[in-house]
Length: 469
Image (cartoon, rainbow, N blue to C red; front, side, top):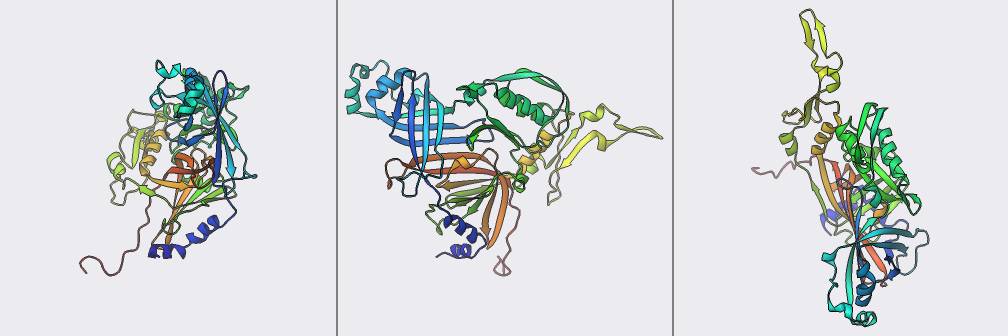
């Protein structure tokens, strides 16, 4: 056994990991069934190959999914391909017991219906070919084809093109977001129900009312939070994200700061990742457990930490200077015996987010001139300070993750537990069949990217053995 494994086994992380792998049984396998909906009929799909879902909480507003399945050539030519312009697809996910055959009764069945997009470059061509001359049953017997469909949430599809606009007086940023994003979304009906069932809005840092908020007509409702953050008075000090996702059975809008590591100390549901040496637990079947509002996860696969080593601070600044436009509308001077004298503290925002150890604190002047919105510049500087952790969560359940979820990453360094707080900003899940179980059993793996605080703790140097001794 390696020294790293021995160290880990006697570390403070080991009891936590043991509680995960030996705790209550977790359902790690799933059964997937699908139904393809055309304008004429519903087709049951049984031969799934894989299901892939990508959630980019930083750059997108909703998830994209891809399903790969097989069907008879005759059904493809006659029942799918002619109706490829308007397709929908339903996925039914059922949790299985660890043996992979019986349904887990304490886990709800998840059913999601999507708009299906047929990409001609990824599927077999048919039009104008001799395939159309054969009987459907003969083609089904002769060949099977692999189909790729891209899936989009049916509720998100109309929300992406919904627009708004108007003038609002003395309204706080949070109230304006609730009114426009949540209010306008509730007017969009899908199957007779509101497309969005609610909103999860992290309380804005900017609590000052906006005297005159002008929202241009034609602005997409999905862009309202970003517009307020960048074009009006600002919302958060640490970036902003807007995302539509189904969480705990409800379709919700999430609005959140993308780089707020301090949210982990609040009451929100959070996730803790424990880094486990792969040689210690090479095949981890039980990888997570729920404990109140905390989900504990043991990760053994590939992990990578990166930061800029404060190079971004050196190049772009660890602070900013910006004239405060509001001060110019007041009395930004002091009346002295020698006449008016400008008050620098009242006229400008001059901020250093972090004092550099070499004393070179560079705070450039913000582009764009005077502004009453310091939140954008603060967000830019804080983004430069963030590190990134990429990890692979095996035997996972991505439905437990919501946009901008607070998290903590804990690993072992020289026998000491090091923890880094952050937020989850990217999830890429992939479900594939488990060959040793029955034909319908799938196992899910997630790649998770975290924006976290930079690692600043330094290891103890050896007393002897240094170069030159």
